[in-house]
Image (cartoon, rainbow, N blue to C red; front, side, top):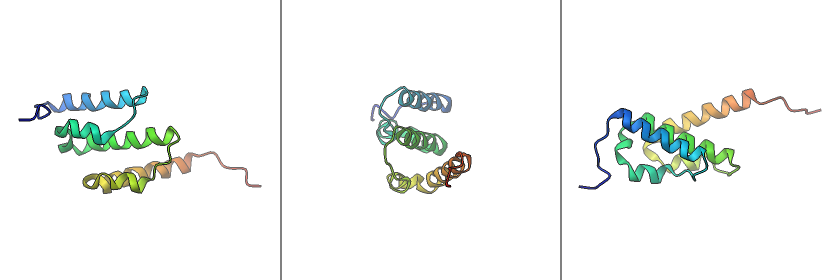
Length: 104
């Protein structure tokens, strides 16, 4: 049995994911794929996986990294559709809430 195949309660998994996101916000380089590889038990909870992926994308973008939403989503085929929808909503609100540009 793999050491990462530990049994976690749902609340413990949520705490584990939240701690990882907090680590990323604090400056650790985000890598959801590595985290999920180390904690495959998280993968059965779509909402936790989507939280991780969404946060990684946002943190990388806010850091100035030129990451394409489509190519990022393609890295996670099992979650591609839901993740793409979440990122599309993010982009919609960012464009709607952006201050108007002085085009004239």
